[in-house]
Image (tube, rainbow, N blue to C red; front, top):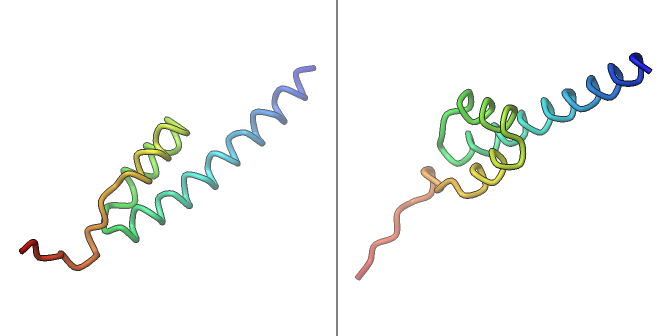
Length: 66
């Protein structure tokens, strides 16, 4: 039984690691730092992912408002 729990925990953390890495890449593409957003996505999961989705795009040219 303990072995199953360990395997499930390893699978869960490996999925969290992969997802956090991808969302950190997205944050970097938007012009934000990679490390802080990796940590947010890894430790807070869905909440961190939604925060990265809501980040403003700093690399896009600014539009002039007439």
